[in-house]
Image (tube, rainbow, N blue to C red; front, top):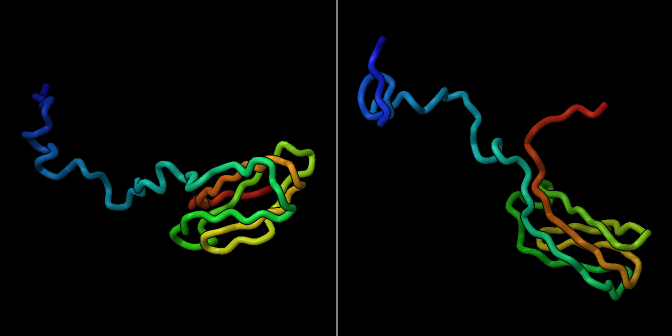
Length: 113
């Protein structure tokens, strides 16, 4: 039976020897661990015009790196009509409350069947 260390600072394979880094081929970056994330979100209460523009902070990577999700309390769903860096425009019935979220696009590949 061999001796072990609870501190991890001595012996072969310890942190001090540099053997605890893992394989250089591992993909454990933050993007792979947490995936897509919400960059901004909000509510447009009682929309006053059929077409509404929301301004937001620019998202790194441009419009291809994120999606806009819209929900509404109205039976007629809101829909995205324009998206440029720093803002997006949606159409919804006047008087409805629209919730929106900007979510980064995931890096994983999926197969749609």
